[in-house]
Length: 303
Image 1 (cartoon, rainbow, N blue to C red):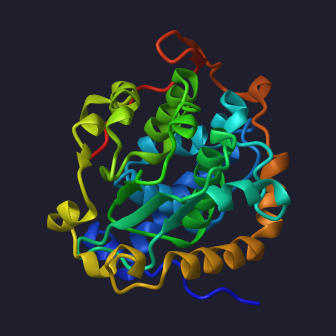
Image 2: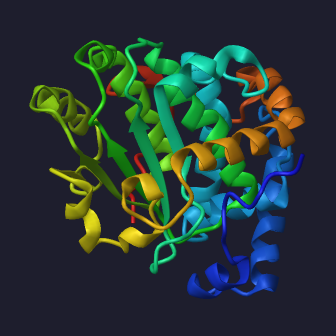
């Protein structure tokens, strides 16, 4: 069974908005591939689509793309809890599907940004919060890296049905790990993080997470009382019907994504085995006391 189109984009249009031609993009991809050939510590030469995804996110800065791609693989070593045992072709994610919708919406905003929607379901199950984050960082992001191209990301988080017990799973260590992944790989074109339907008792959790973000990304972190309040940022029509939009329902979109994950089974099986060989890294990683992990990468500003 083939999936329906889960990510609608126009590669040529996004290139044009970025001031790039097809030919210039391919030249940049070639430069990155030649560099990757010299990086013996990295586990593969990725697809052209994945390289373009990172180039685009880095505004076609060759140096930033090199750093970003290296971290895309290296984080699997640095924070393995966020990348292991979440292969979507296994039963490991069933508890995640029961607890939360986690869906990049098909239609781009008028500004050509991708909306990623997180919405907790009205259930009492308590799951490993790491699996929820890992599903996004590893699985959803991988599909996007292979098939998507946008001018930025907008994250929507509906906390109406989250329980205090579930929220309490967000320990400082886990929040710091998520913030690290966002800063080093995911945030270069993060246009906004919008929280809505947030219970009052979660204010401290949100403030703690916000404190781990860069100042620029922190400024794009907003809490709104309802989904209607976010309507000034993009048309509500492109949201799922469950949230007042005209898009397919969350259940329908989730089913489409499950099919898409199965189409990428071989890729996810490969990712489970990929490891960065630090012994072969040209420049050894240095201790970063601020992060509590090992990394020699400078902080990369979001745009």
